[in-house]
Image (cartoon, rainbow, N blue to C red):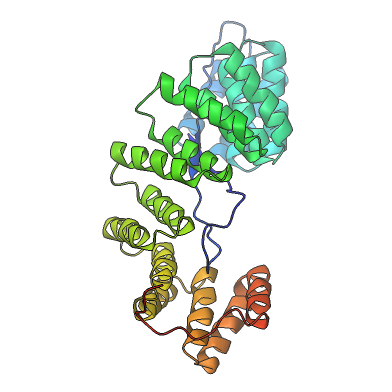
Length: 334
């Protein structure tokens, strides 16, 4: 099983630029090997499979390649080799091997599904879409394959299609939580934030311990300027995973929206303490210290941000240059 993230095409906050993204699930199915048409010594193949099972993909790959030299027409060996190529990061070779397996056996569903995953890793989303569409044609009632297709549609910015696909997934498998989260992200990308909230809450109802669902819900509430609800969502996430720095960046934004700058500063400092490399924490510290008139500390945060994320540092500089950031009294209701 491979888990991958789909990027939202929007920035989900008023201060920080959020990188808390919904996970989409792409399942890799193990190929089955048949010796019925393999004249190669079984010992070599079985040795490769044992190494494969022990996750020694480098040595397994060497043996699969040797086996394929003797028998290049066994689609299962090509699939094993492809999976091993993917595991060692050779995605282009993996794609070629899966394509070869499918040439030998066009109805090889697992190879078709895995080819979609490999093309996604190569960022060839057009090819990934074609591979996923073929996989869905082979197995139109598989919620997992449909979920993969929706994720590729999302990555290509084809949000109306992705929405319909994720709705099909949920109709087929009402317990597949990731589909609810993906549908929420899709509604958000369609600028329908109340619907995004609705579906994120449904995902949370299925799995109340999903910390990323609570985080996404918090950011959706921020976009709606429902800052109290955002604080509650991030607090839920914090109770589940108290050492996760991005949660505190979310709390920083929510408390800032409520003009509770003392609480916002505490959250921002905790985020930076837990993860000194978290760019959003330094961004928020620079903003908050500027609001407090502490230019020295704000400057230090800006310098750290420049080392972590130059694009975010430029956005911050433009914001400060615009004089948009001015002092706001602490704990004053907006």
